[in-house]
Length: 190
Image (cartoon, rainbow, N blue to C red; front, side, top):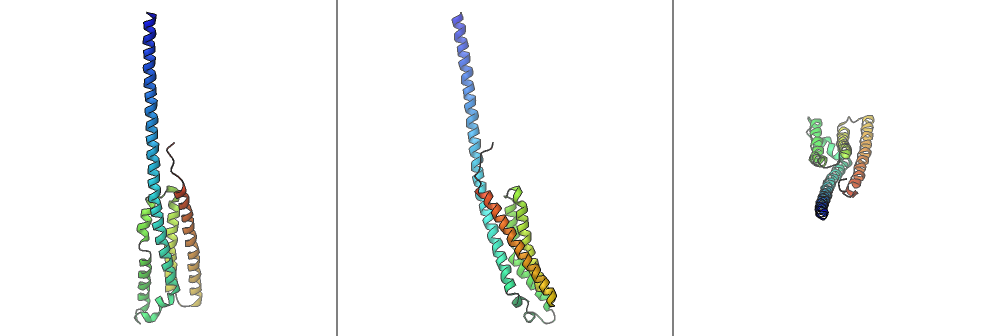
């Protein structure tokens, strides 16, 4: 009888051991699959972020260069002889509004696309870069439409130049932060 009990206990122990090993194997396999899926999703997300950052920064650069070009040729854009004599101030304002609106037209859409995919801690940098670009366009408009006295023109020109420095600095900060995000390898969930 003792031998029978020993065989039964051994069979039960072997069964429990088999079930335990199977359970551990199942959990390990499941964990590996989950980790692999997390890493693959991280790689996909990094690729999407790279496209969004590249598209946004390229459009930002084009807009900033176009604003600089308008500034460089500001006298040509604001020459009263280009507009009707009786309405030249209003027409010039409409012309500048149209030029600058066209210059930054893509930015709101690209901003929204980028905000959908950036890490939460970077959203402030995206906001700042966008705000500074629009502020630069506003400063150029203020300079173009200001009174012709030298003091006002100098004040508006200084505001525009300050806006350039702030915009470029915010763009550089966003670029550096995006590099950190894009260069960080995806990690499995812990």
